[in-house]
Picture 1: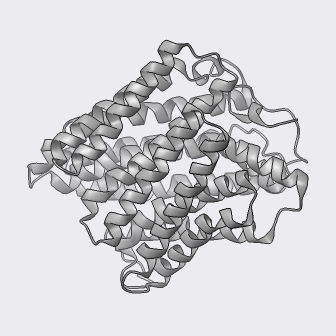
Picture 2: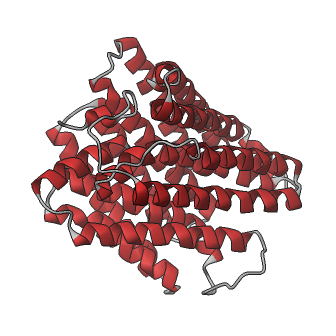
Picture 3: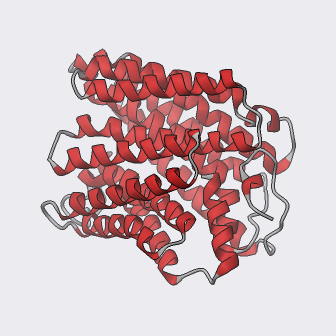
Length: 389
């Protein structure tokens, strides 16, 4: 996420922020809102369906429509070439097809083509800057492509969602690793990272042959990546600072906790064979990663990303902790209710998940609207120090 601010800042210094980028960002936000609405429908709430297949599109809208478009845009801006925008453009078109309820393969086909374009873009980035973090993010895009191709081939959702998780996890840890240009990581620490990532990747591949064993192996990789981030990420030092640096560090560290919890749940994947717990446990496995981990990372990096887009500072306020606290409490209740098979608590926790994201959007909108002109002072360790001055 940190590299998005670097790319956007560099691009803005050369030319006006193009209307096309704003449109792509709008599509990403629309996908987020539609995904949240679809999530509420899946909780069996009495809400308008908007279109018949919306509830079934919750996962693709969140992972591909929102996060896929955003990450694709990030890399396109970094390359600063018109053809690089094929990736987020195709993904946005696929997202529109999902929201509009277009039947058949148009949505998965367009999104698969967008992920293929992202793999191409990242291949160029790796050639230009061959480094561990660029290779990690490139493999993340490849994982997304594999998951999307499975979706296009109408494979069961359970066989593709682990690849989508791999896309997000490896993208995020790769971008945190990017700080190694400023933090002196030893050869041992880098070796531990590579070993953890390889175990996770092997698990993803193995799950295509033997689902339960593969998920157990991938779960071990998730736990190791979580421990690596706890031990080596700069957040463990900046959490002792004040204001915005501490807020970012708290959000990061809490996200690493949920990554580890997700790994533990994946390690117990054979529980999915129990019909009584299957759907609930599956929900816990997914949302510990997609909600607890991924949205903690989004919350942490919002004060870095949004100023780059708007040109206005997103000032630190203690109110920012509200959506962070609401997120973690709601995820905790959701996983606890999943493990106990309690639908009522599960439903209320799902509603609270949506509320946390809505409060985050409102907090961000308020801070951006009333923030001062963007400052050149950024918290160390957040990733903002990557920005060229």
